[in-house]
Image (cartoon, rainbow, N blue to C red; front, side, top):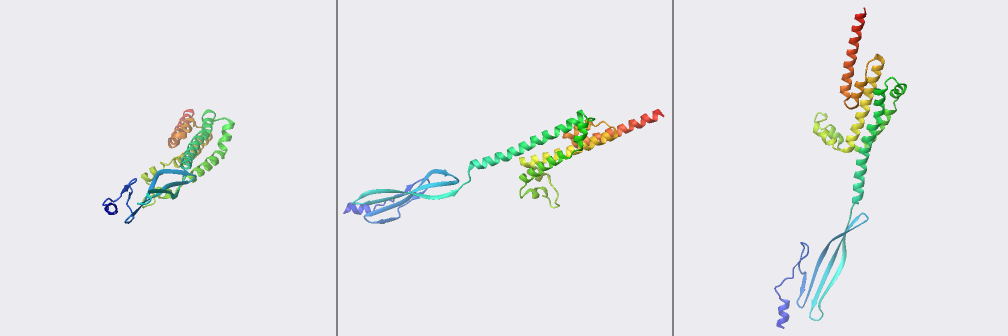
Length: 248
């Protein structure tokens, strides 16, 4: 009897620490004690697009007649929708690949036109190529596609960041840190530079002015190429006027 009283009134309070979870007994009825606590499994399983976490409820019954008995009941705690990591990385890789491919194709596409203007300015093929609008249509469509892919809800906010609705350098730096935006800007520059080089070429053909050096500069340094052409044109006219005066 004393032994039973000692067990029933034991000052020991069962306490279990399972992965930072403290579990205490929830009921006691003299001769019989029952402990219920949950054991959370640290392992997770990725099934399809769901992250499944499995836990278990452990029930312990003790009595003088039956002794101690432990029952483990597994339970599905929760299922959390989760996007596949492989899909995220695939999407990122696809976007980066598109930007890189467009950058390379755009640069390669304009080189034949510059080559014709520099190496064969008098050739019939060069004149036909410079009269065609196909290069600008193709570059325009490519630019529109890249602009569509790079456009985000905050694009306009970055462009018109100031209270005067004017672009600011920090906003431009942030916007062009995106590969797709940078690729679209590069295609934009290629189209404008080629158009300017064609104008320089036509003006040189009409006025019989050397344009090969100016056209070459228009490829990567378009404003300098235009300035060079203006200077070349002025010097050519000045030289022509001096020759005419000397002849008279």
